[in-house]
Image (tube, rainbow, N blue to C red; front, side, top):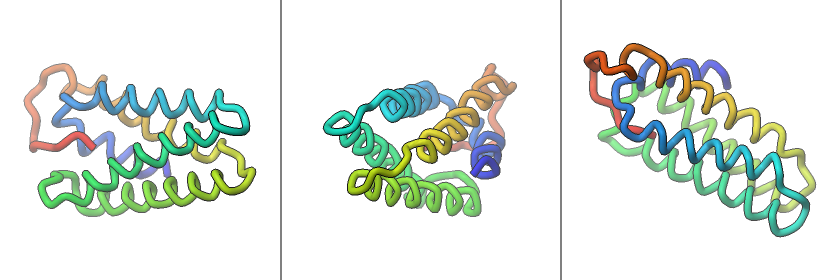
Length: 131
C-alpha cells in the first residue's frame, strides 16, 4: 500500500491545484474514522470513506487522467479494497484501523508531494489531474 502512495507522490506532483482539497478530504475521513463511536457516527464515517474512494476510483478510470497506467491500476485496486472493507465494516464489527492506515499512507504521499520542487512552483514535466 505504501508503494502505491509513494509512486503516486512521485508521478502526480505536477498539478497541485486539487491537492489541498484532497488532503482536506483525507484528513476529514481519517478524523471521522478515528473518532467515531458504534452506531450512526460509525456508519456515517464509513459512508464518507466509501464516497471518497468512489470519487477517486471514478477519476482514475477516466481516460484523460494523466497518471501512469500502472499507478492508476494500483490506486484503483486500493480504492476497490477500501470500498469493500467499508461496506463489510458497516455490516460487521470490523476494526477501522486498516482503513485509517491506508488513508494516512495516501495522505502522507499527498503532503510530501506538496513539499517537492514541483509544488513550490518549479515547472511541471507533464500535466496531471488531481485524483
